[in-house]
Image 1 (cartoon, rainbow, N blue to C red):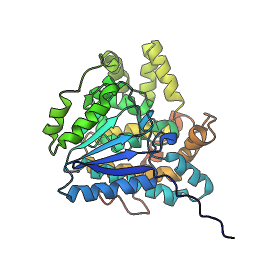
Image 2 (image 1 turned 90 degrees about the vertical axis):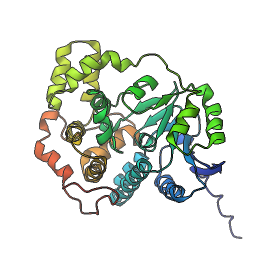
Image 3 (image 1 turned 30 degrees about the vertical axis):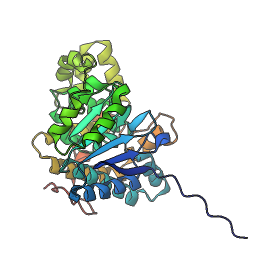
Image 4 (image 1 turned 180 degrees about the vertical axis):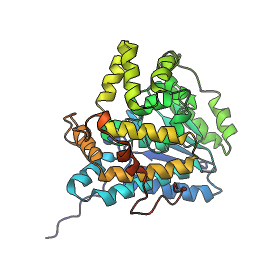
Length: 363
């Protein structure tokens, strides 16, 4: 007797069309809608087709489950593959696919509208911030936590976060601070804030209107958008600019110590738990990105990410925070002063694999 084949796995992403609106629904609620390679590749193909399809007016992306829009790319799977000894090929495919998708969203010729209700981190930021509209609720929690897992703020963040007011973007990128809706709007992530209780009505209004131009989306949003109090970072900005405007990580830490406030102490303690290499790598990339265009930044991020796959800290950070969850990563080097400039230089060198095809490879 032959055994019945197992039932097919539930799809992790759905593509539906209503009234000319392509609706992308991320559907991995138990994983906080983290992006698998299949989800990334499926989304990229769907957007390529939608860009050329006159019957598609705009794109709407959302997350299912109520807790998260998208908690990032599935870096846990990358870490597991690295532990198994075959992670480099999988990691290259993940990063190549993710950054290609980021570029496609940024160059998408029609309105691309993200409804962000809940957690949005890492790769989830990448599949929303590059679109025309990012609507967040009061339940939104934005973060770029990559320096805590031995990586760096990627998915185009080396280009976008340095263009936030003052040093707010660098602060968010180095510390992985969780930001609410007003702060997410201040740093340039959110374009509009809408109460979570009105998301369904907004969604219905967007589908009914099927806007083909950004100004038409703005017209729909005018009846829904609101404010949720002042951004906390407005009050913090003077000290953030003062401390994070320093020229080195060592100087940033020293400036925080000199402040003497409880906030500065907690911030310094948080930085002390992150990968020293990742902190210095992120700082260098952010400073350099101020004079680079988006495509060059994205191509540089690809090189940096692939080099991270071969380094110690990414595998160790994913192990400690996402796999074993002992929260005790053993970074190598373990201190900022042990990370040499020559160590960082290697992350920007050409790769053994092909560069990112959709962006300009750095010189």
